Length: 383
Length: 123
Ligand SMILES: Nc1ncnc2c1ncn2[C@@H]1O[C@H](COP(=O)(O)OP(=O)(O)OP(=O)(O)O)[C@@H](O)[C@H]1O
Ligand SMILES: [Mg+2]
Image (tube, protein in one colour):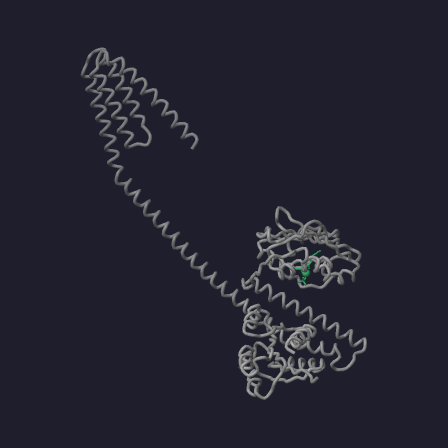
């Protein structure tokens, strides 16, 4: 490619020199033998024009002919001979004929070549189009199938959960009745046994509720009911709620709410659930004597909630996976029970609000979860 | 003062009996029906201070039962028990005149608090 360009440039340069020489020659000859010289030059330039019609690049014969024409013109200049010019004109004519003949001979095959080329191209385009069409309809079919399957899955999950709830309610009701003494007072051991069963029933209930919730969020049936929410009040309430669990493990649970009240434009129940999940997790995955801190702030108008703990933490790899449903880190599994759905739901809910949730952590040192919500649109009325 | 009467309409036997035991233990008089049709059939013959209805039942469902009961006892408060957590159920039931919707599995406290709240208001 590069060499070709170089050659092309060279040809151009020679071409320019040739024209310059011819022009000078013309200037000189105009004075002596105007008629013959101009004829020579016309032939030379005419040839050039002809060549440019048929060839992409000027062939060597042109240069040879030009040189020949220039020589004859010079000859006729000094000897005033019309014969020389005639010889040159005949030679030029013959060359013209040759160029024409070649072009004429080449024409059908060129056309044929072009035609087959066009046909081939068209065929290829057609082939690709049919291929694409097939692939497209295949994709569409797969997509509708997936959508159907997804709907089926959603329906199945909600039906199954519903059917699980009924017997679960019966078990729970029976246990509750025994516990409150419908069948008479219980001794300590009986109470302990029943409490164990109750805890398991509660876990199962939470699990079913979580699966149902996630199912509803995924299928887009969950809607937000946004109002102006005071995150400060919410966090205070949540701290109160989680105090007993923290006290049980001698964990210091505090809030740093320094400064003004922080408001958000959000669904209060859903945000309460999200922040509650983070606080609950922090307490669950922090050993005794640890510390859990909730911080509220406004960052460029965006309300932020940070929940930090001094717990088991996790590796960077693990911190990417915790948002997947049912995922639990190896270290956390023998610290507390859980189903691994809490953070999946939290992430979905925060993202429904247009916010983001992130985890930073160091294994063995603790974790920080940070929620950022979009700036509240009703700043003035929020106060 | 006589005991408040609570009607229970629930097709699941286990749930019905548990509810019955629980409410009797809590000092209520209980009327049990195992289907919407049974509750509606003789509803002129009984009267309750509150009715607990299952939302989804074979035959007449909770909403229809409520409609029929309200025709005869317009002042009787209705509370739904439902195993489907869809907010839709909650909304549509409340819009149509139910006092409350309780999600199964319910806690005994939640149930008693709801009942007492409603009864103290209507008494
Ligand atoms: N504060 C934390 N410190 C360390 N690990 C955490 C923390 N929060 C979450 N994790 C890890 O992320 C996993 C997923 O959390 P997630 O809340 O989704 O589930 P879970 O708490 O195990 O169960 P549940 O569904 O009952 O909430 C946890 O099992 C734990 O391994
Ligand atoms: Mg959790």
